[in-house]
Every structure is written in C-alpha cells, then in structure tokens.
Length: 212
Image 1 (cartoon, helix red, strand yellow):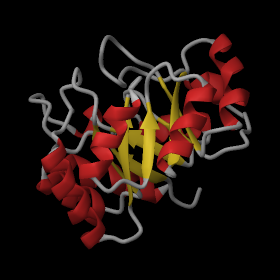
Image 2: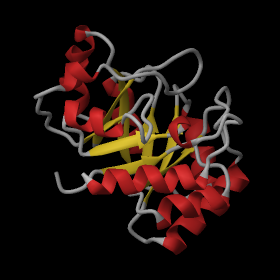
Image 3: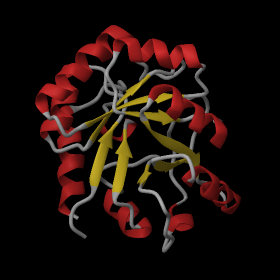
Image 4: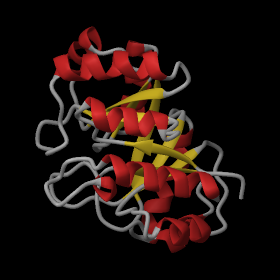
C-alpha cells in the first residue's frame, strides 16, 4: 500500500479542523443534519470552511445531509462554500442526480453495508454519484457502528469509495487490509468520551492511514 487518504467528519471547531488539515486529511466534513450531535450551525461552518481553504487549497470540504429538501441544501450553500455533498439518507439515484444538477457540486452517496443484499444498490448509484461511502448506521446518527468488511473484500467498483463505520486507530489497519479501501472516513473514532474531537487522536489516525 502507498498511503490511504482520509476524511475527518463532524468537525465543529478550529482546533480540530487544523489538526485534520495539518495532519494530512484529504477531506473535512461538516454535518448539516440537526439530529446528530455532530451538527454544526451555518455561521460556524462558514468560518471553518474558509479556514480550511486558507490552510490547504487542495482539501475537499464536504457537507453532510440526510434526506434534505432543496431549500435546506441551498440555505447551507448560501453560507458555506463546499466542494462535495455527502448524502447520508435514503436518497434514490434520481434524487442524487437532481441535487447534482441543482448545485453543480459533486456528490458522495453513503450506502449501508451490513448484509449481502446491500450490494445490490451499488450499480445504480455508481451511475450518478462521484464517490460512494460504505457504512452502517445506528439510530438517528448519520453514521456509526462497524462496517461489514467481508462484503467488500476483493470487490472492484467503478467509482472511488470511502470506508466508514466504527473506525479507530486501533482497527484501521485491519479494516484497510480486509477491504482494500483507499479512502477512510472517521468521526467518533477520533473523539473523547465527551464527543468532542481530540486533536491528538486525529493526528494519530491520519499518520497511521498515511503509513499504509
């Protein structure tokens, strides 16, 4: 392996954002899904997105939405400059295409990956999404829980994809070797018990990903 790219999601403060970007994250994520404890207000996301671009012109700023209406997405974009939209709800392929046409932005479609039948939806989403994200979900959180890594083993996809769900510095190597993931996504796995991002955990996770 020659290094795994990483996305740090659920960022809410500048210290964590700087740890992510200076640590080598390729993507930084802001959650616009109010039920999540990682949700961020527009004014704070605006500041962090601008700071992200100052720190690294290459980093991709991702806004996470779940079953959002057009006005919700457009309202966020009026405040926050984003590069990609991550759609983490039950959006069908047609909805992905509508959002791409409306915003002119690339999309990441998150798909559950817990049972073999979840593989069936991948081909239709590859037609409209720029990237895919394979994850499992628990409750109202947009992500969380262990991914079914065995389902992804030795599989090839037409679009780039991210592995998410319960990743930490402890299990990252196992997850990457089991799935062949070239991009990984983490949120809770770099937090303290309080749910706040820990800059040292962010740096540790990113350094490990880059070492593969």
